[in-house]
Length: 480
Image (cartoon, rainbow, N blue to C red):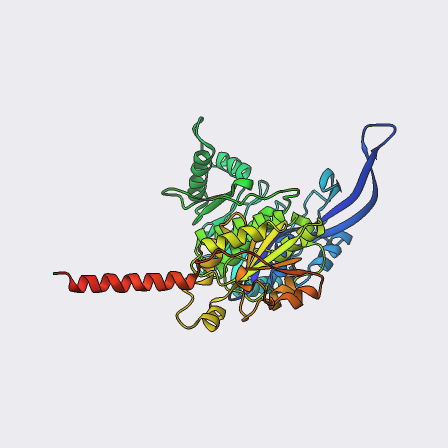
């Protein structure tokens, strides 16, 4: 993406108070929480900015924070984010979730009544103008506290929309999206609420997709947006351009304990994808997959710890948080399995090996050779299928949990970063030393060899296709 992601919107302070609940209070049937641990993080637009920064992107956050302890805590938590503060006279909103065993028991809010974002001084307006002028993409994270309704900011966003992709994540108490936004991302309940506000009615007795599709098409027209993507939770997302059949991207099945922040993950991934030159339907597909991976990795729990750097060197497939997935499985005592290869022309032998590898543990990560790596290993005529497509085919397999592309000749470096428990190789290594065994041993992992289906190989498929094409060509030349 050329230029930073500029996130503009309302920032909050989110705090999780996690404890253990092993008994009930003697005076009432309520759980008693012991050993409470506080886990603070930025919320709202601050969370979106943090997610993008942890993905390795340059991020500028334009937001309002109160001159209070909560505001100072949010600012301190914005690691890797360039902050542009707006003049604001209200408190910083704080949302505390009391949790036990991964489940929320209670939420405590403070600072809920928003203040006012005052008129920007010439110097402040210049700072915001310069930030937006250099943006590779803009994400408006509206949490209903007034930032997206500031007239000067709306004028700047309106002037920007023709040359920079803008994603608008709306809020029921927020402002209407600026006309011309590339993509607006309400969830299903928000879409129904917004549709009612602009006078849209949905006929009764229709299917869920028909109702959502009609609302999304109406919102495209009512908001004068280029497209609307309605997020549907475990069902994925529906994308409408206002006319024609909508595009539905189903979400992969994941176990969800805490989906908090999944909407922000969706919006961030969509904005980054659009800023990187992907078309809208590709951006929505990436966003659905990344949101599902975020939820599978534990949701907000996956954000604990220091900010992560960029993913291992890879070609643009999807920016799913593979490390968070691996860390989540490890935290739960599961076994992380990895395997690798070129997977050019996926065949039955590959599928058999992948299925066998997945049965060795609780998560399977495929380390995929990049196009340059394949060319060095297989010659200038390979690969036949580019890395982005090879990754998508692998991700479509039920036995594959994640794919990461690496550019080196061997997967040793990416293995050092992921640190799987098991490294599985095809049976052509049986009885021989597995090259990656030593690096697995360095952290107590194990390299294993899996049985391989004989007579299945990409090279053999290529030879067969070439021979048949040559035979058909000779036949056509000799036919009368």
